[in-house]
Length: 330
Image 1 (tube, one colour):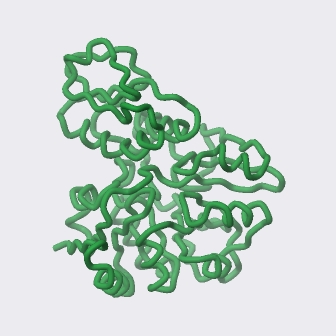
Image 2: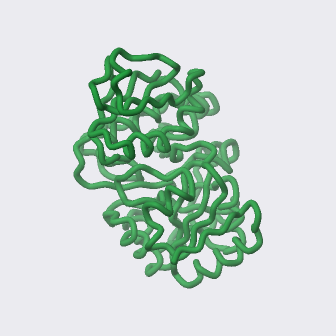
């Protein structure tokens, strides 16, 4: 039976039980500002194996390691000057940096999929308190079956993985609702490996550099979220819909009605006020609602591509892609 503890009403109990469970080598569902994560001790190979098994995740797909502070991060990775500047500006927050791992760092190779680099970030919220109390980094992809819609609430986690988990920490809905932005500094260049909850424009403004977008076709897997098929509902997904077919579920943006939506199975608006931040926070929850209505297809109306729109569109495109090998991360 899965134990669910509300971190808002029982913070000390939540911390104690979480650390006890992690020490036993068992994954714990933790709340982050991005999505809910399936966390385990990044130094424990048995614990990491349980993450892969519980999610059905391919083991060539690296995990992001979450740290409590800079001192912990520096124990495991080396910072170049640009990455250091970015971490100081945006941590704690939805930014993952791909950095060289220190020799004999203690992070098990299963967490990095055997790479000599490690995805690392410092989350906001209760998850950071758990990591600080536990004293070791936590590997934490999203707490869902691989390839499926990422969870933004404890209820989402319980519905998907509840029968497999010993503990879920409930801190309410995730504030951002999209996984972290992942970047890698290569010399003087900055590569965007996955758009996410941190606006790319903020990174470019701080560094004065234009981020290089990846060539996704055939690209090597350097970080989570790089596989073509991901974040997929059971229903098929149709992008940039100009109209709605009878019985489809419609997810639109900015209050823009589409022809035929009166015959839709359900109509959901990511943000009637056209706020991309609100749309990002609602995306995965609305995808789950649309999927649950029984429609065989979810039609998405047009969404602006600037700012967080880039990350929203990235998730929708991957949800619509042919479904081969899945994966996920926070």
